[in-house]
Amino acid sequence: MRISCDRCQSKARIATTREITPRLRKLYCACTNVECGHTFVMHLEFGHTISPSALDLPEATREALRDCVSPAQAQLVLAG
Image (cartoon, rainbow, N blue to C red; front, side, top):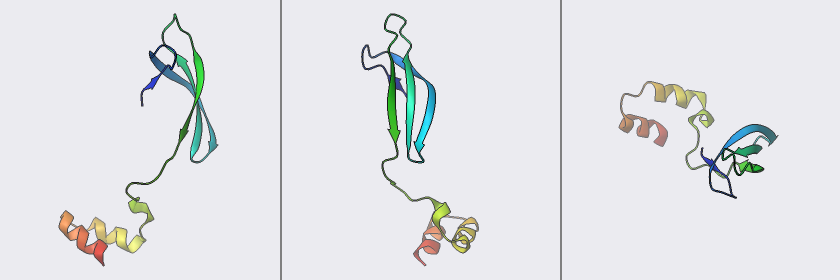
């Protein structure tokens, strides 16, 4: 992930992070431009799922998927 300084647009580095909740972190950042020197805090927040994790599937379904040799076969397993 690239972080840019909002003052000079130079690259910034993440010095430390602090977990606020499992879905929210504070990123403590510092601009790498020595003439700027801006330090700031950004929030990194989980937005939403685009594709669910296979870990959320029942164990029996995951085992059946491991035995699949093609994507088409996996689609049949998921369709039931």
